[in-house]
Image 1 (cartoon, rainbow, N blue to C red):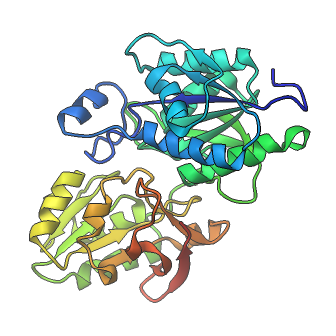
Image 2 (tube, rainbow, N blue to C red):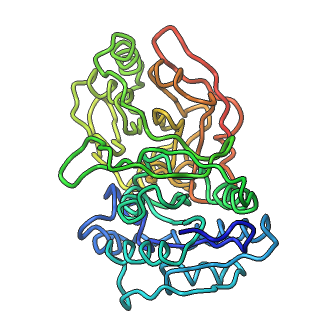
Length: 375
């Protein structure tokens, strides 16, 4: 159920405190034993801080009365209080636990509490857990905080999540929603699967679309572009090749088998480091100036960084010259972008200076387009 029309808006808050920890250390998620492995590799959690940023904007943009139902402690209430909002109702969770069942239990409790909107910090797995409990009965909106974020339930930034939430809650009986796909990579698989359908606030901009099917890696344009870039690689120069089928065409042209979902360090036609972590990238680039970074575009979303490729951190990006960042994309991915813009999410509020304004996107050996990066 939802709050009565004209009553005080009620928002639920759920934080997956381990979401995103596997990103910088190239674990590609936080399923199973990944959180323990991520901690051992020095990864730090960031989802609580991202939810705090979301709620800080919500508090600013919705200065009126607001009831907040939050999961206890690190799973929500701590972020609410850090933002300056007041927790009206606390949903208890098992002490010290941050399991999927905790998320599902919190979602059930928020449904019973009649919240108008569930705000969550996490990734695709967290979204799938919540939707498994709520279905389309309650509107859902994610503050992007995970490693995998292919679903259409996430705002493009934590701040935008706060703005959208405030706009939606202020609308009262004029609130409008739309359905979107919840996607995830199932355990033991590489391809994205449709997990379910969620309902999100309808807004003119700010909620990312679901990731679309990958480009056909056998297309002539992609093969030719990969071959051209491979042939133009300078001897003794480092090339950081990102995930995606378009960038993967470069590896194919070199006769190399790289990682499907991460970054490979290539020098003189050989892989120096496969599936490199943020630390490995920083260490290598610190010793090898004038390196190149080749990035693909997430189909349907337009993200260059911040969706499954958190290994490129601000400090790593700072070691790469602006002119040495190469963006490639299949033409069908560019055509599908609505609006035709690119996005970057480096985990902080301010954009990186090298990834602002307009950038060239290569779509074939002879064609390119120019798109604006909208942070």
